Length: 74
Image 1 (cartoon, rainbow, N blue to C red):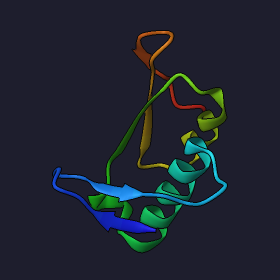
Image 2 (tube, rainbow, N blue to C red; image 1 turned 180 degrees about the vertical axis):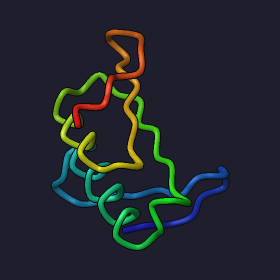
Image 3 (tube, helix red, strand yellow; image 1 turned 180 degrees about the horizontal axis):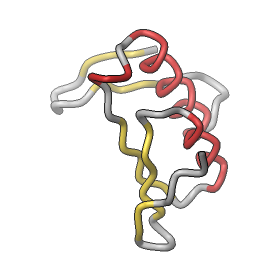
């Protein structure tokens, strides 16, 4: 469920889903519905489950634990 708030952000909530799953679904949706040339997604995380998102070309990850941008695997 995507809803608005008083903040300049959209709120995404999926019942019985963890935050990393919500982020992965949102990133996949954005890649599918937007031109990759006009899309840049930066994810700040310490969760290694999100490293799988590196396979999506517009996604870059900031490794909060390593305090650095992760090198792209591909």
